[in-house]
Image 1: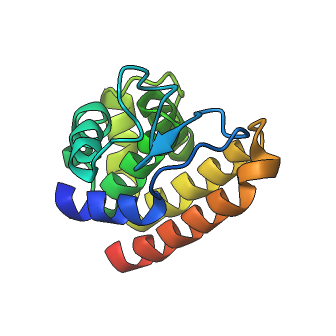
Image 2: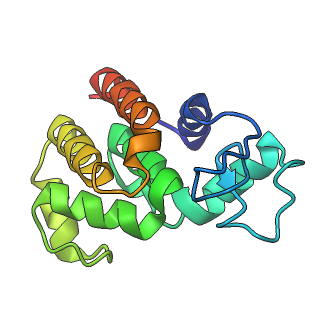
Length: 159
């Protein structure tokens, strides 16, 4: 999988401009939130600008190119939705290593020892469980569950 395919899939989960008062991210467009990017004009955010942000702050930050294609998408989608460090921590939990948020040789060895389908399934299971503890689970659970269901379908295609 290449970056462009991952981004297109990601945008299938993200909508256009919204300003839901129950969303802790606040004003959001293409998945880019005012809370995370206070200097951005969220209403005027273009898909291309969101793509640049996704590459720089999520795809490259987690070094997605080093993972199996299917895992790269799953992990970058999680990073975009919940933060890069959270994505690494949850992936480490899925791999059953210490979740310190820093990818090193122990995490890499655990990933190398686990099949791509197992990584995808375990990551989505850990992600869904983690989401149930978020304070906005009552408001966002349906959308998050649908996102993960879609990602599991992608995982079946990718592995």
